[in-house]
Image 1 (cartoon, rainbow, N blue to C red):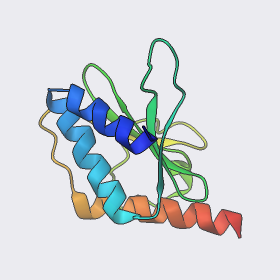
Image 2 (image 1 turned 180 degrees about the vertical axis):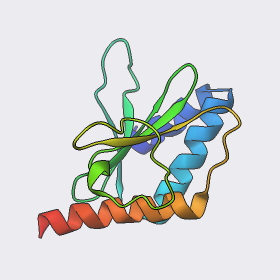
Image 3 (image 1 turned 45 degrees about the vertical axis):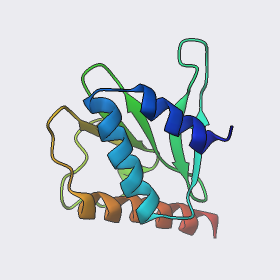
Image 4 (image 1 turned 30 degrees about the vertical axis):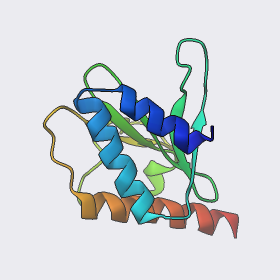
Amino acid sequence: MNDSELIDEKLRGMNDWRGEMLGRLRSIIRKAVPDAAEELKWRKPSNPFGVPTWSHDGIICTGETYKDKVKLTFARGAALDDPSGLFNSSLDGNTRRAIDYREGDAVNEKTLAALVQAAARLNSDKSA
């Protein structure tokens, strides 16, 4: 089973709002950067499924579920413009930025897609 299929399995096993939210965010990411690699990273006994990760010339973002939130962490988020103020977590770091989604939060798909695309472009520019 490849990583995308394992992520599908993980989402099927999550029968609450967090699974629905992560699935929705995943769909936005995949549409925004269709050629992004989808992987599971950092698998360990306490988290056998690992962390869903989307990469394009480097990590774009990761998607993690916690008891009270779904967190999208952008690997180079501090270098991204965020005029819409999507980033609401990990704001003090020099590199990463994150968006915490809680139960009932709205998702601005267009703005999130633009941020994901900007992260992929930033990675590509770094590789050039």
